Image (cartoon, rainbow, N blue to C red; front, side):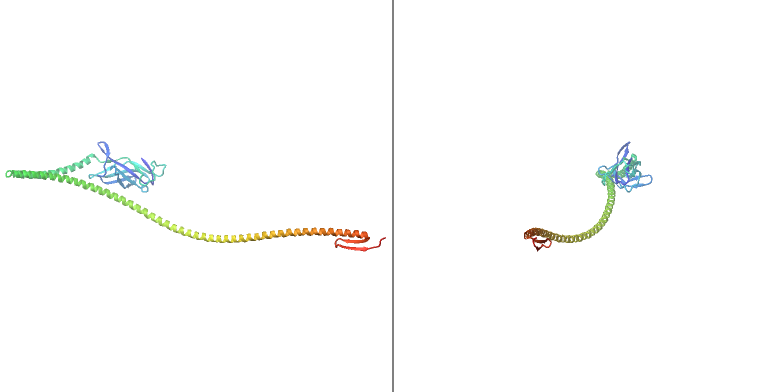
Length: 350
């Protein structure tokens, strides 16, 4: 028994065979009518859409929608009609629907329409004598029709015999006509059989085409629902896109305004920096001039100190000279170095 995880969509490939002389042989399905494929559990029976395989006319491909079949154990039920006789397959459990991957044993690849599960052969219950009985009934009907035609021929021949005494040629002609009528009757019967078979085949083809049309209509409805859902999703996405675009425009306007403010602030900063650089250059020039002036002042101070020192030395020398002269002249001399004044007092020599 195959174990399939719930939710997977898959196709059941169901070979159909019948027992003939104890041997299972493929059972051709195109000649059958009213074919029904069901999966049967203990509580419910679910009908499946199906199609007859093109290459193997005894295989039924039944589609199973994963969300339409509940968890449980299922058997296959295939039934229909052949030459007016009902037939059905025997039921036995073939697969189960389980909850999770750990419980399953059948893996699927995520490709829509290609996942299939081969079921065991469905042996149909159709006794050979039933089909043979139908053929015998058809043969008896054909024989009855031929008997009626032969009765008509015998009547025609009897009439020809009664008239044979009058005209042998007319009797021969009547016999030939009777044989022609019999051939025509046989041809009509065969044509009727062929016509019935053609009508039955055409009816089977019409039923199959109708089923395919129904399946195609279901597929179209599903596709239309998916298209409507996709259109709704697209409209919602478009609304979201328009809203996002509006927000983007607002953010872009805010960014442009902030960028302009940043540029204005940057221009002000550059102007302030330029003024600062210029003020710094002016300060550096002033500082350089101050340094030069300070150096000139220091040089002038050094020169003044030098000159003062020279003047003091000259004054000291002059004082010394005066003192020497006073000493030589015996004159008292008072020298005040703070006021550079000299007081000469003359006195008498003792």
